Length: 143
Image 1 (cartoon, one colour):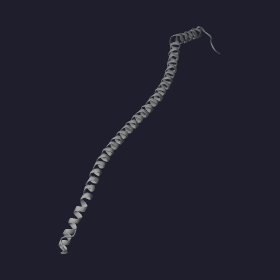
Image 2 (tube, rainbow, N blue to C red):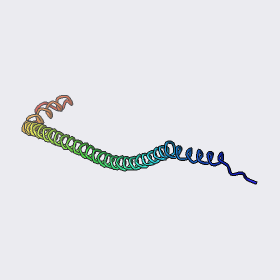
Image 3 (cartoon, rainbow, N blue to C red):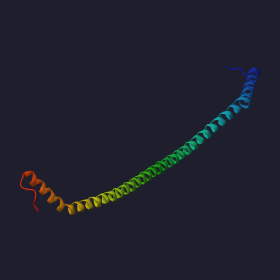
Image 4 (cartoon, helix red, strand yellow):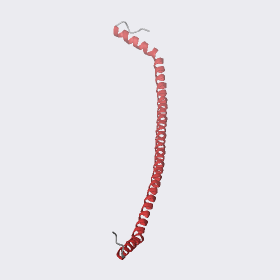
């Protein structure tokens, strides 16, 4: 049979006192620390998600700005190429016009020279005919 004596009551009171001290000085601060840790982890997780969303927004913004910069650069290159081509065409047309003018001058000079030679042809033809006849021995006076 179980003996209920004073030692059992003292041990029971000491055990209950130990539990109360442990709960008061160890368990409460430990639970408080664990709650703060969980709360901090939840806040960090929320902050990480917010930072991730911010980073994604900035990345999208950067991609849009980069695309716009590429488009603007492509447009400037196209405009520059077009300007160079127009300048080249203008220079080519200018050279063509100056060459056409030179050709016209040369043609006019050639036509004048031809006309002069045509005017002299009757004189030369009779002189040529007389020279040929002399060489052939047919007589020198063919008028």
